[in-house]
Length: 315
Image 1 (cartoon, rainbow, N blue to C red):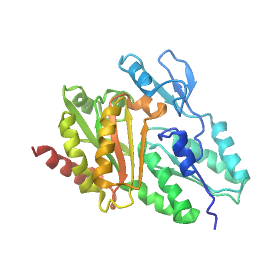
Image 2 (image 1 turned 120 degrees about the vertical axis):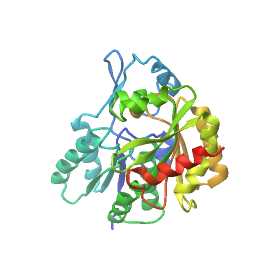
Image 3 (image 1 turned 30 degrees about the horizontal axis):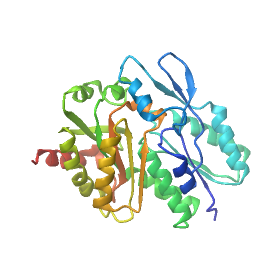
Image 4 (image 1 turned 45 degrees about the vertical axis):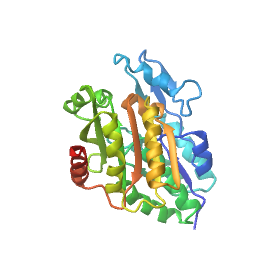
């Protein structure tokens, strides 16, 4: 039984050095961000050279088109090879294959490395999610390995189902950036431009995308609905992990953090700004909590949509 397996993600997750160290997660292979002037820069995954608010403030001018780029294939191969040389199995979590080519790139690299190291298993899991959900998967994998003493195979099987239970509850002020990148239909983006309207979404297994389920009228309604939606979708919240992430909405994210602490008292609560790579596609204006329910997210989020619509109707 190999319990000393490695946990790796692509740049679609949100991390700090403290998270990486605490949970024994490998540092992601460095990808790049393409800036509006066409310059390619390595992703500053820990915000060492620029504060998050400075980065997202540049996007307030929507002519500034940022984009993310995958690591070079050899970079991925080199990282997996280094772990394989240590004799460690590796589980990799990637951003949804509907949002990026990361799943395909890591799958190809994993196959090549395993041909050189046939005694090592490398399993690449398409999260069908993004941002804090990938952070959540990595932390859950760490707990399986280090606290629950689960084997590599047991962990992979468990997390393959666990990913389908991960919810998102929060808001995104402006859907323009997601629409520009093809992450949501352009018609839905109009909602994000209506004054005072805060689109609320959850994660849909069938599409591998964040799906707008309703619209709150201002931050006050978001915060009123926020804990109630979680209560109706999380099941037993004891010992659950919460990841709260944000892009230029730290004030609202901190309010969410306080609500989660007081209402659900999680054993593990991670508060982290959205990373540069995902932020290039999501843009400013997001604050959301990621958590796993006891049951798989319903088909096409039909159940979740009905829950949110009912909560938004109430005064």
